[in-house]
Length: 310
Image (cartoon, rainbow, N blue to C red; front, side):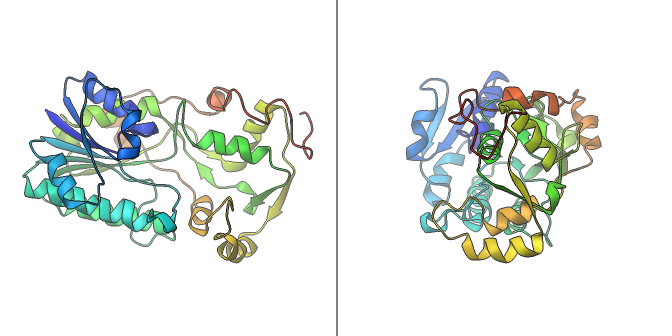
């Protein structure tokens, strides 16, 4: 099969493009000009361009048997046109529309755990809108809804490392939000194998790991790894919401209002369907945290002034 992979240069996409290739498929990548150097020079067909451009999408999908659509963002940069509406809803519409017009029969879409029409965050609302575009396309679809995906090179643990080294760390509502991190090594085979699994078609499949972990426990585990203890203070969400909404536009402000809404919501799921379909042994998470944190971090041997050795 010839597979078009969008979002194939990121943390998940890099692993997935290699896995799909190892399955014996021909892999075509839709890649922005600034990301071309992230792809190995041999082994992939590359279409350079923007997923929001109709003509680029038409060239990318031509002659393909299936699409794996990963494009998505966690944080917006509105001044650069990088918004949830653009990168989720509009990009999905452009890719799916081109696929339908070229009679591409199959699509795998990576959504997010928490996607639903009445979501509090625009992130989850636009993911739901993207799912609806996929569902209504007439293509044979599979939608995956993963929780946080962990693995070497992820973006989550460097952010956590920075957080625990800050001079003062607000912990909103006690950091009691539950997460269900799932290993990249569990996600990638499922995505790749599902291309040839008719039993996954027409399904929305939730993907989570074997542990449900509080955000505060993850933060404390990262802090212990570096031998520091963050200077935390409790901040009720009733105070945090208007404060962050007012300050989010400031340069280098660490959190947006929509990211706050994500932090306040449990990100857990029922992964029984995932286990039934793919039969994997899910990798544990908590014991992997030290290996996931950056090995050389600017604060690793110089704890923040407000911290002390644990």
